[in-house]
Image (cartoon, rainbow, N blue to C red; front, side, top):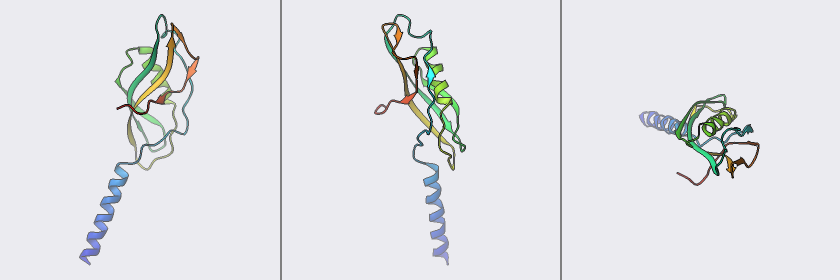
Amino acid sequence: MKSLGALMLIAIFTSGLAMANPSTPEPLEVPEVPVPPDDCFGRTYTCQAKLSFTVVEDGSVVGIKVLESSRSYPCDRALIHSLRGRVYPELLTAAHLEERLVGYQCINGRPANNSFKAMPLRGTP
């Protein structure tokens, strides 16, 4: 009887560990947002920053923080705006994520596109 109880405790403990570290959820929807009109003047660069956020049980995003700024306030705000509009699948427990997001490019002082979807830049630490 004690071995059955010990086995149950191990099963409960390991299932709790699996739920505490869920795989990274992928968004179902990523909104397209406008490129800020005041960000590209006179320069060529790519808008990207590292952000942390929490995906809560209903699939919405909360607690967005800029960890590594793009050094451009309009870029950071646009990435936050796109991230805030993401929709994730419903989760059993909230998931805290960090992503390096890339938004838009400025080429010779002009935006390459009028709008963008903030997407993770894969392959970077």
